[in-house]
Amino acid sequence: MLIDTHCHLYAAEFEQDLNEMLERAEVAGVKFFMLPNIDSSSIGSMLSLCRQHPCSLYPMMGLHPCSVKENWNEELHSIEKLLFQEKLHTFYGIGETGLDFYWDKTFMAEQKENFQQHIIWAKQLRLPLIIHSREALGDCIEMIKKNKDESLTGIFHCFSGNSSEARQITDMGFYLGIGGVITFRNSGLDKVLKDIPLSHIVLETDSPYLAPAPFRGKRNESSYLKIIVKKISEIKNVPEEEVARITTENAIRVFKLLL
Image (tube, rainbow, N blue to C red; front, side, top):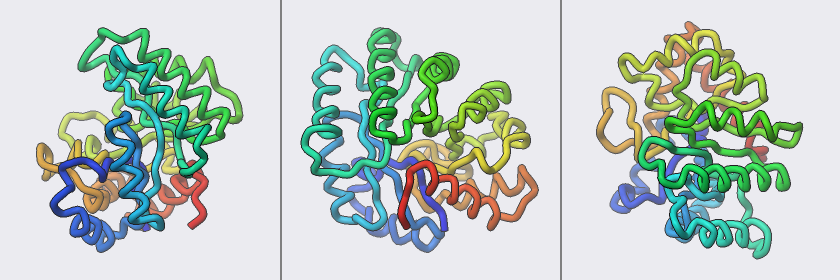
């Protein structure tokens, strides 16, 4: 059994063949799917999809750093209302949140304020924090270090850092989210993972983005998680079954899933 810990299955890219895609994932052994939110525009479609598949799709709530613009306070209020006031939904994580200094550095200060608020929520609600850290991994690590206590845990989604950064993250009790990048030639992630125990790793696709080789550049989907398992198995020289078992146990633990 596999768990895709990070996938945007409500994205427009899946409108035409979502059921078929889910069937392919089931055949590949992927039974459960964790869905991170982006911003107010994605909340409705995400929750609707999770209501349609309540036993396999689990929603999370947050504001993506790339959606931190002039109206970010309004966006934040919408998310806070869902998390604390309406009590109509069960969320399994806070995110996707974090920092992204790749696309636009206009709102760097606001992104940090947004991330800090999500950290506070994660601690208050004792939910895992799902961290996006593109071109900002060091800053994200430092913010977590400043806020770390026994109530704060989560996943550094789409981890692609170096060995030192990986150790800092795992030393704080956070997990590394590993997806398609592990299959990219010259990513260097294979060398980093050699020294990271499976007990610190969870699997993800980030569908529809970041498809693994040989599908790089095409639409990603959750069935490709088996490609990630195979690659990690080769890197660490352990059976694929062991990779699947341990990473699934990690996902169940961090999200407190009752399966």
